[in-house]
Structures are given as structure tokens and as C-alpha cells.
Length: 209
Image (cartoon, rainbow, N blue to C red; front, side):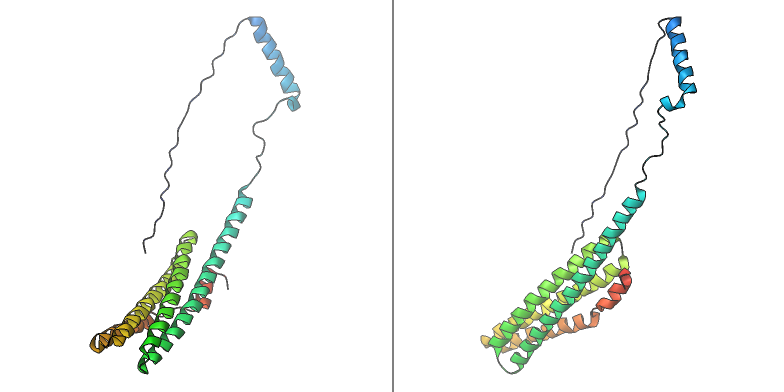
């Protein structure tokens, strides 16, 4: 899966303004000095530019933190949904294997297709979780979700090869069917080797426990 990250670049433009003035007469200059004296005597008449600005940083930090927690919760929810969906796929895959072992090749094809669909959905959930880990910059959580996605992809392939095996068996191409069955088993074993972390582990990594 290709990750696309946008790189933001900015440029600063420095502008310089000059203010020119002239003195028309000594009387106007004296009048200006008088104004300055009045302002000195009455500081309330002078508007200060050094007034303390409204501090919005705490509010911004609070908003960022809230968004961060929301992203973490979304990651965990998608991961949990991915696991449930994958388990549904595995149940169908086991039914397909049982049907094939009993010579019901039509049943194998149907159950393998259902398993394949569930594994595809599981991949999508895990992939969405991976994408969100970039938002919170949590590499450990990302690795957990990526491994889960890889496992779901292998199960998806296993179900696909099993479905093809069933079709060849229906056409009485048994040598080819056996070969595809063996490849399906290899993919399934590889997925089991990778495994999938429990949602409680991800929850701990995300700091949501």
C-alpha cells in the first residue's frame, strides 16, 4: 500500500515601510510638543500597543489533544472491527475446507468466496487504522496495524486459491486442484505465523487503557 504524505513548504516575505514627514512651521511643531505634554500628563489618553494579547495557546492545545484522543479511539475501533471481520472470514474458510474434505466442491467454492469477501473487508479496516496512525505519529501502533493488514491479505489470498481449487475439482482437474489447495494452505499458515495482536495490546500502545 502506498502512503502519500503531503510536504508543506512556506516562504516568508519581508516588507519594509518608511514614513516621511515634514515640519511646515515652528508653530505647528510647538503645538505638537504641547500635545505630547498633554499625553504625558494624562496617560489614559494614550492607547498602548503593548496591551497583553488574549492568550489562545491553552485553548489550541486543548483542541489538538481532543483531536488526538479521537484519532486514537478511531484507530482502536477500526482495529477491533477488522479483527471481528477477519474472524468471520476464518469461520467461512474453515467451512470451505471441511466441504472440500468431504468432496463438496460447490460448497467449498461458495464458502471460500464468502471468506474472501470478509478478509477483503478486514484489510480495509486495518488499512484505515494504519493511515490514522500517521496522524498521531505513533510508529508502534502503526506496526501493529500493518502486521494485521498483512495477515488479512494472506488470508484473502488463501481463500482465493481455495476457491480456484474447488472450481478445478468441479472440472475434474484434480492435479491442478490439489496444487491450488496446497498453495492456499501455505498462505493460511503464513498468515497464522504473522498473527494479530489483541486489541488490548493496541489500546495500551495508544495510551487508552
